[in-house]
Length: 250
Image 1 (cartoon, rainbow, N blue to C red):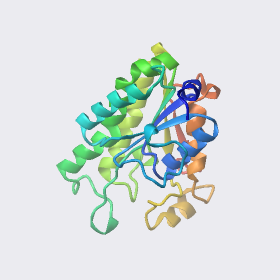
Image 2 (image 1 turned 60 degrees about the vertical axis):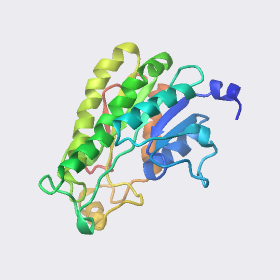
Image 3 (image 1 turned 45 degrees about the vertical axis):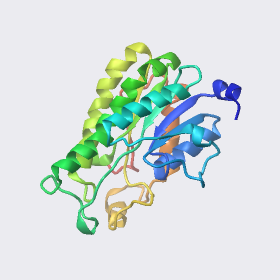
Image 4 (image 1 turned 135 degrees about the horizontal axis):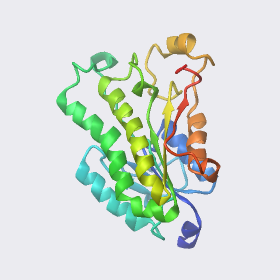
């Protein structure tokens, strides 16, 4: 891949790219000709599911503020024209209790509270603020991935995960107000029950009893909305949280 081609392509920075919604988002943007820079705790895998090589992967521990700051500096070095067209904050963690049970507000350790909020809430604003000049130069877009668990007690999602996602939804509104005047739109998508490898036992009952469409969503159905929010189709959408859950929230 030549530098000239890189300069001609729009650029997405995506956290949590290796599976599920993140993986589908990589495929959706790549198919549309975007360059995708991915971030994760792991080194670039040899059996990478997309064409870009290690030059488009940044290893970072989003649970560590220093590592996140170092990653921001590295990302800046990889942007050929100092422009970033889109940032999608998809990475999140949701530890479970013994036996895969949800961690309640009482049972979650202080250490886990801090770690979950660092990854799910603080890392997104650190990345967006750290790359604001690049987003501003491109009149770019930020998409924060929240969750249906951010607006109700969920049978599987832990208390710290749910509250971090509620905080991220609120942050999205604040960012939309603060970033909008410099031409950067900030929105959120709130997925419900999506067919990924991390579904919990009992999800079938939620599908049957709570989702009007009576089926799971697919990662690509989420990725398509993320893509729209990062394009001119959504040029006047700012500060929104779009529910992608088959009507589960009604």
